[in-house]
Image (cartoon, rainbow, N blue to C red; front, side, top):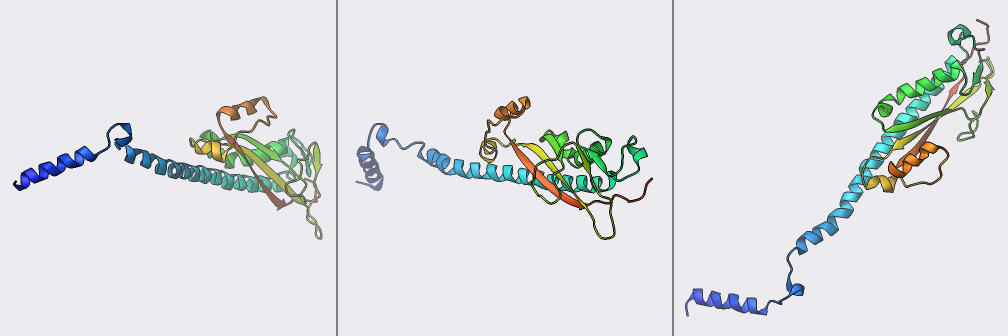
Length: 211
């Protein structure tokens, strides 16, 4: 018996020992193992991308709060003729030219995120200056002009709703909430969002003299 006949006989012997039927078919095993190992890693990567985008929104929101606080520190005590005769050192929340200018300062900072649809809502609030995270004040707010011994402060909070766009990761990083306060909050069911908040405090620079 030559070498070719020995090799052929050995091959036939191995084939005869192989299990038959579905249990013995190992085709596709590598693909299944690849999926089992790949999906968790892929999901983890998507979560990292989503968190990185949310962190970028956080940084820009903090910058918007800083710019809004700086604008408020100067605008509220500025010449009344520039703001339709509104009294200096006075701010009417959501009902005055002073408030609109401060809000515009935050909107201009957030403009790149607003234009690409990543940010859906922007709220500017004025909590008590000595209470970080305190409740938003409403109505007419009074601020003391800058003096030699005492300097009042003004705190501004900017709150935005950031859209979570990365598939799979958006349901993990931005969990669904059914705590709706507005009719438009129902959009969160289709488009996951996360609320990002930042505050900044700045010395009020209103003048003591009259214009």
